[in-house]
Image 1 (spheres, rainbow, N blue to C red):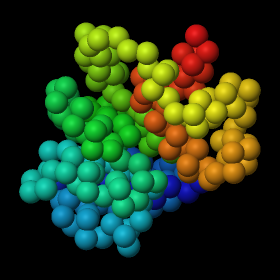
Image 2 (image 1 turned 45 degrees about the horizontal axis):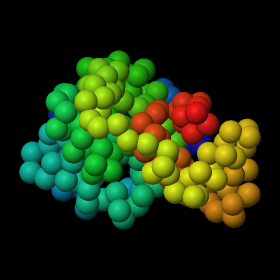
Image 3 (image 1 turned 90 degrees about the horizontal axis):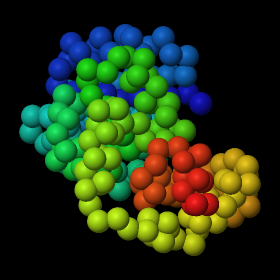
Image 4 (image 1 turned 90 degrees about the vertical axis):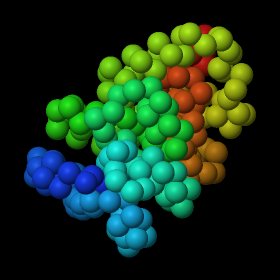
Length: 206
């Protein structure tokens, strides 16, 4: 798959540097840079990205507000919050707005590159320190039976995954699109508080 990436960040020098670093990825076909959320929104339909690295601390309209506005228009577009802010409020606000992942700017470009591929593979990349913070937060909350929150369709998909079926096979079996399968799997990961297929299946079967 050839990836069309957009980077929305008011730090133009950093964006250009990151673009140069990521340009050697054979799967990233195009990288567009936008200095503000407003300009990105104006060009969103025409730009048609697959993945967006979104700075949440933008001047004017924030990255979180931008994600919240655009995600419903094109649910298949994957937004990764890309920021220097690692506090719990920003993390949860970004994820609630529709961000699929949350990566700190201090991460290596290899980790950022990896995050781009992970979101397109159905995963949710989160910086390790942020992941630990999220886990600690939820560990303090009242325990709930997360499996019971799964819909019948989500349970069907997990059952098929546990039988070794891949996304395309699941889509064929259930007569739905591959994109719909990916959306269900992301929802499953969120509900079960896991970040990969193996953990989801283990929790579902336990």
